[in-house]
Image (cartoon, rainbow, N blue to C red; front, top):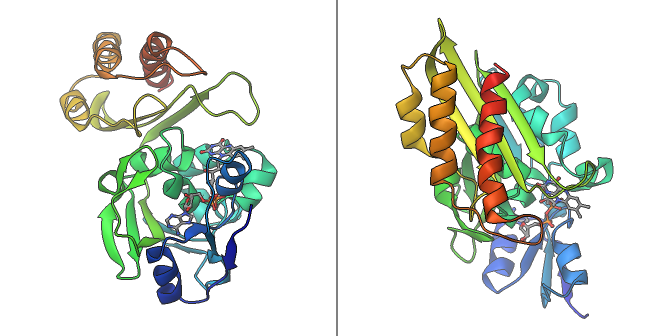
Length: 272
Ligand SMILES: Cc1cc2nc3c(=O)[nH]c(=O)nc-3n(C[C@H](O)[C@H](O)[C@H](O)COP(=O)(O)OP(=O)(O)OC[C@H]3O[C@@H](n4cnc5c(N)ncnc54)[C@H](O)[C@@H]3O)c2cc1C
């Protein structure tokens, strides 16, 4: 396989090379696997790691993760550690080698419905900053489908901003066919804020159960103001099972995935 390799140092150069058809990579943990399998055959590879960018900006309420920042960089950052619902998810990504090399931004770039950081970004109402113009867009509006992002040809992700969940109980589980290095059959991340047993706010995101991460805002709205009881869990777990439309693939059937949607919901809400 022959390709040209560039390692630009400015946003403008990256943008120009991408506009001309270059394929960006940072950690390469998705790109190189696909090149080896001949799913991707780029003529021009653009390594973004020579671009000087901050690693992490972190305040009391907001965390910003930049391109080229690895999972390990986030997990080891003292301020980012306080975003524990995020860290819970990131420590489950791949293996230490993948976390040392792979980047959360590459996970969004890959736009896989099984992407663990993508799941976290949906749960935490993430916003993407898009270079070179630095426009901001909600993560849910950025993702157009599996492997597809709503960006112009010369655009790329510069950073992702995430909000901290204060006073929420969170849950995360990934179901796969083995324990290590799994691509999930289904995953769930939830965050619930209760006030005297009544749901004040709730966020429920599923991975691997649709063309992208699934979040039904209308169902979340309906849960608010209701007492978190066994009846409520029964009712809404059944409604999520009904509404979710997964596919059958090599990892699991659609029917099995629908049952998982229900059971993961029950587990998540019974853990509170
Ligand atoms: C053994 C193994 C285990 C894995 N386990 C998991 C797992 O448990 N969970 C999980 O979610 N993933 C997993 N992955 C997939 C992968 O590691 C992650 O998706 C990782 O976050 C990709 O980051 P990267 O920097 O390596 O991406 P790259 O391979 O560099 O790029 C991925 C995609 O993003 C695009 N891209 C890169 N930078 C940008 C940018 N700035 N703007 C826009 N697009 C960009 C690239 O063009 C490409 O399409 C695994 C992979 C392997 C090989």
